[in-house]
Amino acid sequence: MNPILQKLAQPFTQKLIVSKAQIWRCLIQTPFYAGVPIYFIFVAFFAPDHYFSTEIFKVLYEIFLVVLYIALIYFILVFLPSYFVQLLLQKYQVLNFFSIMAYALLFTVIVPSLIIILNTAQINIIPFRFFVILCFFSLTFAVTNWILLVRTANKSKSCSKLKFPN
Image (spheres, rainbow, N blue to C red):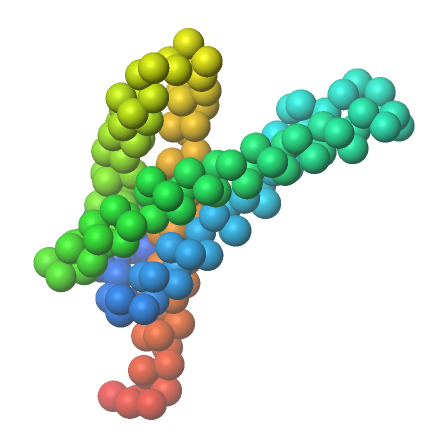
C-alpha cells in the first residue's frame, strides 16, 4: 500500500487501547461535543427569514430544547448499551473506527424500533419521520465518540512514552 495512504488510513484502523474510565468519560462528553454543531445546523436551517424579530429567540429556545431532547434520548437509550458494547470490543481488542460505526448503525435500527414498540398506543402522536431524523444523529454521536477515543488513546500513548521512553 502507498505509504501516504497508509498514513491517512492509520487512525481508522488503529486499535484504540483505552481504559474503562476513559471510555466512560468519552461517552459522557460525546453529546456535549456533538450538540454544539447540531445546534448550529438546526439554527441555520430553521431560523426565520426576518432575523431581527423577537421570533428568533423563540426559535433558538425551541431548537435548544430539541438538542437537549436528543441528548436526553442519547443518555437514556444509547449511553449504557454503547458503554457495554465498547467494553466488549475493548476486551477482544477490536475497538476501532469500523467497529464503532457498525454498532452505531445497529443502534440506529434498534433504538427507534424500541421507541416505536414501547409507544404503540400513541404512534399517531409521534410521526415516524421524527425517528428517521433522529437516526441520523447516531452517526454524528458515533463519529464524535470515536474522535474523543482517538484523542484519549493518543494522549495516553504519548504520556506513557514520556514515562517510559523505550
